[in-house]
Amino acid sequence: MQFHVLERRHVTLVFTNPVNDRARAETAHLPGGLRTEVSRTVPVRLRAGHHTYRTVVTGLPEQAELRRLLDAALREVSLPSDGLLLTDRLAQRLNLKAGDTVTLESLEGTHVTREVRVVGLVHELMGLSAYMDLGALHRLIGEDRAISAIAVTIDSSQTRDFYRQLKTMPKVATVSIKEVALKTFQETSARNVLFFTTIVTVLAAAMTVGVVYNSARIALAERGWELASLRVIGCTRHEVSVLLLGELAMEIAVAIPLGLWLGYLLAVALVNLTHSEEFYLPAVIQPRTYAYASGTTVAAGVVSALIVRHRIDHLNLVAVLKTRES
Image 1 (cartoon, rainbow, N blue to C red):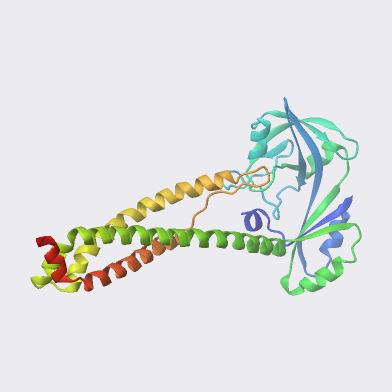
Image 2 (tube, rainbow, N blue to C red):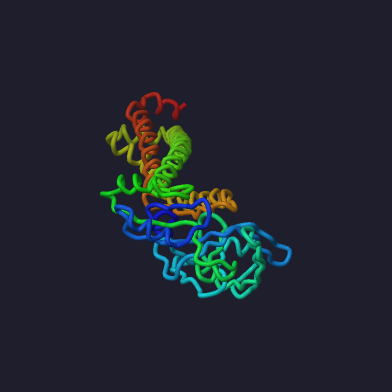
């Protein structure tokens, strides 16, 4: 969501200080530059009643394409010509809703203080921010066409030339490359998730083998005489095994859907515990995850069934029948 749907830029240039928007034209002429989009970020303190929060207001141009704003239903939200858009979690923290008024105090430059109306809410997974139309933000803080950053899409075939020329641009404080940020995020997440998933999978498989195998051993011990009698009257080993293991298979078939439902509830509960002011993680479970969990359970059940089948195949018929007679 964050790297592909909300942010469509390839590179973001952040300047040491606000610069004139002529920097956009200079950036657009760099080799490989396809599209540029400016923004202005102002640190502010928002106050609503006894609630306060320090964040940034980002001014975006009308019809922004490289930095989209979405609502909770993932529908695109248009920037109003005046007023403020808040992320839903920031609005919740300040106890605000659309139509309310919030006091905005700029923490940069002249430190102006204004009353601004909240005209809508947007949904974001990272950070607690506010957004305004770029022109409206300029008017609010009393400045003329200043920008803080430029988002750029570039031609992949000219990436090296683009970065080479970029090094010659003055006042560029940082260069954020989406591909690098995404790769780092995915590698870090993959290590953590893989480690956790491996442990949970091993424990789940061990529990499944233990439960199924113990159930089968108990059933075999309780019904050993009946199974031995069936062998004596002519039933094959396969037929006797199907009689016992078929019941276990039915138990597993009933248990898997229940386990998937309980697993979903557990996953949602764990994800809800990870929420913070910096990020929000929705519980998204892909169909392949259910298939993986079910496959692990079935595989563990098959291993248990093979062990029990071995015990059935080597059942001492005489000893079992004598035990029942005694």
